[in-house]
Image (cartoon, rainbow, N blue to C red):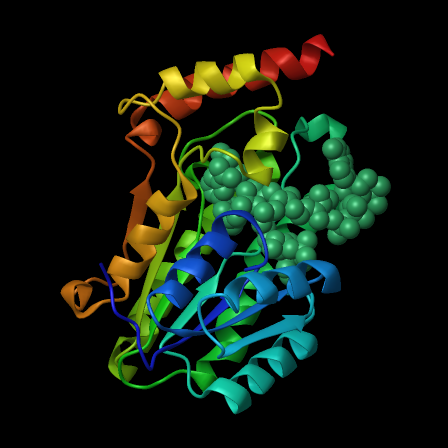
Length: 266
Ligand code: HXC
Ligand code: NAP
């Protein structure tokens, strides 16, 4: 469907789940791909998987909360693969907890990974982008605009991520760089859903609250990311694109109650 031959893609947090599926979709479309995350084991497994599609694959171990380490990984990826046509910031952390069950450090951990991490990836990555023409995607979440109980940290962090998207779109448009957020809905078979929808009953409640009637797939999100990085989307910047079957139109808030009820029943 898409051709990214001779394009270079860097995916921060690209070693599992949705982000790995995005990395794999770009590699399958012919791109050179670099991924970064904290776990050496996950980085090695992701590189092995991506190598099935392309020999131009690189993996780096770093924590996006650490600016210097992230910058060094971006530099090494640039030196190995060339300037990035696509930069994706997708590293994130999440656990369900009421605000009163969260320490200041618990709140800070998620904000630091999702929000500061996105700043770090974009701030350090700017130097290594293909200009003009590069496309940045921040992976957000419905929590950015749907307040959800047990998710104060994620709601605050991802709302900030979407504001980074909009401000960077403004500041970097003169360089020919587009910046957008992609917002996955409830995506089946992911760490995020394991944490927020730990039982089949909650998953089914969530699926039935999605207007299109099903949980999303990782491929649904990957397809949207690839399309956003094609010339067909060349006039699109600063948008927050939900890939959620319409879930954030109302179902997200109602199905969050299912999680809350299950959490407090434990
Ligand atoms: C309350 C908790 C907690 C919990 C951790 N903490 N889990 N507090 N309830 N369930 C607290 C700890 O006690 C500690 O506070 C602080 O958070 C930091 O914990 P650490 O384990 O030291 O942090 P760290 O090793 O940096 O790990 C970060 C993490 C972890 C977020 C806590 O879960 C992680 O690495 N997650 C990455 C993978 C992930 O979450 N993927 C899902 C993304 S899905 P104290 O005060 O004790 O020091 C997503 C959106 C999904 O983002 C949307 C679906 C619709
Ligand atoms: P996941 O598999 O846990 O993916 C998170 C990735 O980020 C992993 O590769 C993880 O690897 C990496 N990561 C976490 N903390 C990091 C850090 N401090 N530094 C560097 N890398 C770090 O989760 P997922 O459910 O697929 O979620 C992926 C993205 O989609 C996230 O941005 C999430 O907010 C968003 N999202 C997911 C859903 C869903 O339904 N799952 C819905 C809406 C939005 P390491 O552990 O090796 O660091």
